Amino acid sequence: MSAITTRKSRTMNWLEGVTLLAGLQALPTFSGMALVLKLDGRVDIINRPGSAAILVLAASILSALVTVWLAPKFPRILRSSYEPIYFDASLSFSEKILRWRTDPTGSRQLLTNVLTLSLLALIVLSVG
Image (cartoon, rainbow, N blue to C red; front, side):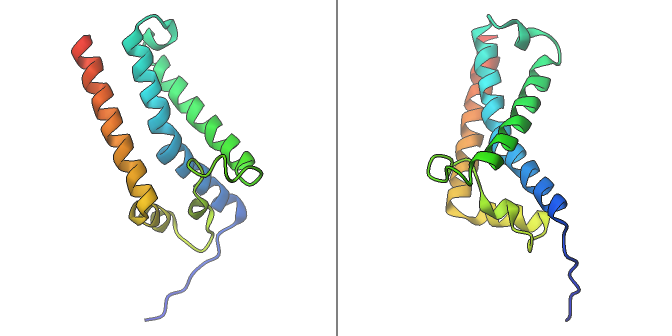
């Protein structure tokens, strides 16, 4: 079986990497922070309808952009929030996610995010 592969543009590969960083790395972190702020109840921006979603999405995108810019300069400091596999141009979008999920570090991050967000959501729902 012969497969024809098309080369991805640098811009498309960069956009895929930033999207994966924002969605898989930053979004769970900032969602958890929004849940903690909601639990505190004193932050007005979280209590307005829709404002938490805008805050979380904006912070996730900004965090991904800053991480892409700083990670090559400070690899030791940002090793837990930067995944080089997201920027591998030879992989498709779904292959990048598959490789991240099957990597032991990625699996541990995914499990930690799921458990943390589940517990925070349960606490927020219980408290009110």
